[in-house]
Image (cartoon, rainbow over all chains, first blue to last red; front, side):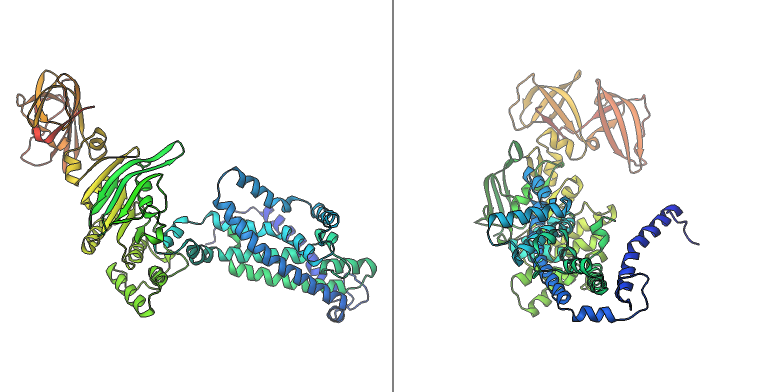
Length: 267
Length: 352
């Protein structure tokens, strides 16, 4: 006998509609990218790999994809290190300063990207320290945006972490650093990996902050897609979208393998 | 030598004093319990010996080495935590090998030591299990094995039985005691459970409010409590208000109602006419026919299987008496007038 479902039908219906609204744009982009016609239309006029090949042979899009990947890779590494250390400090240090610091670190999540991008742009240009229109400047922007996600996932793992495990390691002869490396780091590493992948996805798709910091020769994929759609209505952008989606899906699958996502979202 | 000296050990957190000056000598090979209610400072003391808390004032010596300023990893100690702290990302064998790997032992030595430790704690065949696949008792054995393979100078146990159910607790109590005895390792055991402390220890230190109230063998602690706290925290006691009449050598005579009774004299000086507490365990109160000893009225009788418990009213104060439930012993019913007496050597006078 089946248990009676505890979820009312109306909630199920809402879930299905929400899921559809999330999934349909993805399907549209994929189909549009496989369009056989000349313009970005839906429904597609037949299926072909024409625009996918166009993407793979386009110097603009390919280099944008490469730059997005590079920026995301560099800022993810930096975010992971800074974010994990910040999470460690925020969960272990006491006092009033910590609450203020936590709010400060989390601010980029609530702050509109446009505001952050504008602020960074004005700062770079007016301070004249050579960050304006540079890869380093762009990476800094992405680190600021992605760091809170690493902090959040690692904090979630550290909050439930039993400190007596570290103490046990110490009493068995481990130095503070060895205890951290052999016990704490090993136990929270799935959460760090999850944070890393989130950071990568966020950075790869980042638009608002990038809008202010990128230049024509430092164009990320979202920027290139945006520019392409403004001046020509070619499906190459949609084909590029397919490759972006593929990357994100691979990352999400990898994340779910590494860590129980329920734990992070508190489900 | 691996005895432990605590010299004027103090730990304060601002205004809060967790440990207020402890002087203790824990002897080589001894099973020593720190017993007290929660918040009495026993765990803080243990954590200072382990090196997780730095004392505000005082000194800790293990053998002849002053370890006060040493970090835990340099103290050569083994500690078992209340929750056992088994590393969840390692199997049983790797947990036990942890300390040996840090000591850079060879593979063969580690394998041999792990196999020996598993035999010692009765967990042969558990090598590849993980923490989530172990019961509480098994985790405790792993925690002990993990500590013992490193051959620490002293063993520290922080309420290791409190997370187990009652039946297992009984079993582990004797198992730990036997293991400790066969190894002859100096052991400090922290507990709030008087039963554990009395059963397992060579000596017990009873703590209250950041201080050690009394140190002694379980028998001394139970039979010759020095303070009211000790006598009421460990087991049950009748505490009766009396007035001191005079000292007669080892004995003190006190006025209890209209009668004068004898009790063991305290070490401290007591002045005639001052108030004191007469302390007597329920099992030492002898109930007899009316006229034998003090006159008492039975208030209630409670049947407890092996024991029968009486509440008696004597000169306006209540005394609880327990006697074995044996066929040849008479039973008394409420309202009955009886005689109550006790062996003066089985009672204490404490100055309040």
